[in-house]
Length: 394
Image 1 (cartoon, helix red, strand yellow):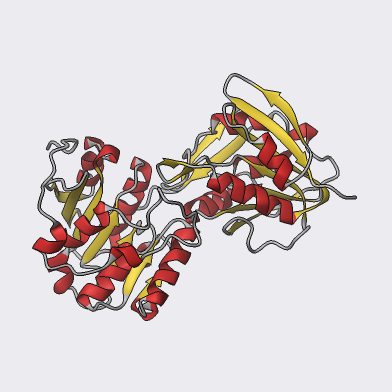
Image 2: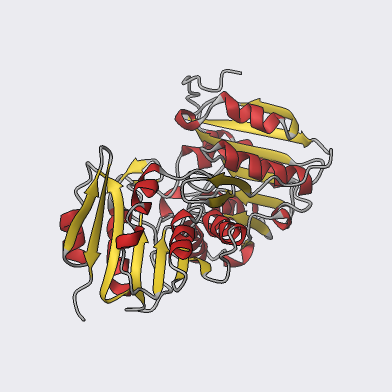
């Protein structure tokens, strides 16, 4: 199966399957918006075209949608096929909010429900639409749940950009479905279909769990969690600076908590510190909760799904620790880091500290000083910079 072939079909799946939907009406808001960032891609159109017949015969309450980045699959499926009872899971909170806004503008808020990545998402589903993840762990977790909970007749219609697809995806899906096949590429996207789920008993293998001798911590991770059960190399460098972080802090925030490494390391090192770990990723929040429990720290770590500290009161934190992303999806973009710096400035108490680790080539110090306050470089190695920024005031 030549899944990485770049040969594209010149035919438009939209015209060939009678799909009539204006994807240009969709927005990414409240996520970062820019001229080079889009609310849909060719994969959305391709999945909908490949699934047209299945959706037409599915009926309400029988369709599950996974990985719908900003609502293109959900809103278009509801509009084109008149479907209701769509069950949707989006790992990122910003995508979930964007879907809500896009559905509201289209008058389709009642057509779907947002659900966690659990069995109920797929119970009895006969059709699953799936924007494939890049990570095989996330692929495996979703496939396990579809296999265990969907209808025996389920049709999984998935897709991704060709540059993000590998034959290993087929191998993962073949562990859960008897029939897996790749379709013809179109505009640098390719469909992937799966059916006939294997019905042998299959308990979920997530979250995964791994012990790390250095910090002496168990780390847990669901499939979509950045870095899985590993310690990100930048985070590992940042952990060395925990003894220098504000020593009288009572309330700390692990902003962008991932698998909970920083939250757990802070709580372990500072018995009097309460840590709120927050991430817009549902998988990250669930993973951090599992990490806290695995290390006996659940009484001092709260994990909260939130977008850029929107639910946190101003001036409520003494210490914020951040390993900011420098990508928006697959696009290199500073927008998320700047958004998080501004959020930290609002939530830090006067005299509070923002500790950051970031790739050495990124010149964040001027932005930190402009958005938050005086900034000092505390350490550098060959790849990373660690800085501390103090919120002005007493």
